[in-house]
Length: 343
DNA sequence: TATCTTATCT
DNA sequence: TAGATAAGAT
Image 1 (cartoon, chains in turn purple, brown, red):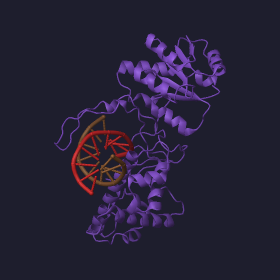
Image 2 (tube, rainbow, N blue to C red; image 1 turned 120 degrees about the horizontal axis):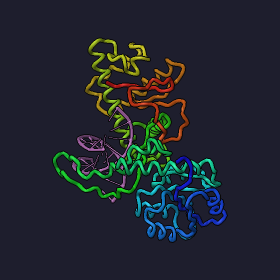
Image 3 (cartoon, rainbow, N blue to C red; image 1 turned 135 degrees about the vertical axis):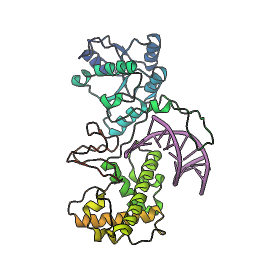
Image 4 (tube, rainbow, N blue to C red; image 1 turned 120 degrees about the vertical axis):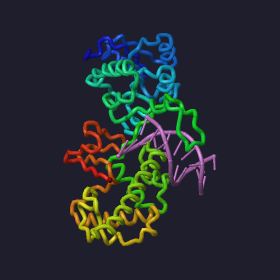
């Protein structure tokens, strides 16, 4: 099946003209138009499993934005829902995907895009046969948004032996995207820390300064944790390296050791280990080192912690950039990729 | 109660 | 390994 033929599509739009255009485009399907959102829901209830796909406008009279999407997903989480709107803002698109939509179409609809919708049916069928969805997004039309619903299914967590079993309270139908910390996001993260100062670098402040739609405090907290760990490990390693061979950096795979002359790097490794105990200290040392690195290398490369892949050639969306096809960590052979190993 | 931090999970 | 999340700490 490589066309819309045979695909059972329900289109919901309160704009009659828009609906007629969609109808014309989708005439090869068992297409049912439906103006009223409640009518659409009733239709879906009475014809459970009769539709392969729902295309719905975001904004409709008498109903809140995304309300129909949420209701549909509550009733039938398997049904792919495609949102459409004249709104072409990236924030709205991200919000739609976050709410659980499979795809976002901007109006006026284009036949070329509609003709690719048969893929949703294939994806859905594959999900059913495999029994999981977590890999699907990597191959579907929303490749960078990794479905977290399967993760929500976990209800047992090891908790330091205190409360072994805990029910997950959150609605498992809510789909959250995975935030990929690409060079754009990480640069904004560093920029935020520079502006507010490392002593005030807490998730809330960083998030506020970053001002990235869709990014949450939890996302920032998670990244901050990794970043702190990286700085700590780096500082400790550098200190021990200085003690060991008196050349600053013992590990040749380290970013700084590759790019910074040992005597230059060692200038910042004179702090006794007893004083090297805070994020602020680690950060200042790291930032100083980066300054020297940038001064030493005319081409200022983005500054990143280890294992954060930089896709210099790809368009930056800010979050959820598609890393498909770049391989797993350790495979970064592409010239446009910079990847660092720490241990 | 809100937020941060840490440990643990996927 | 990266990012999400649970839960204790502040």
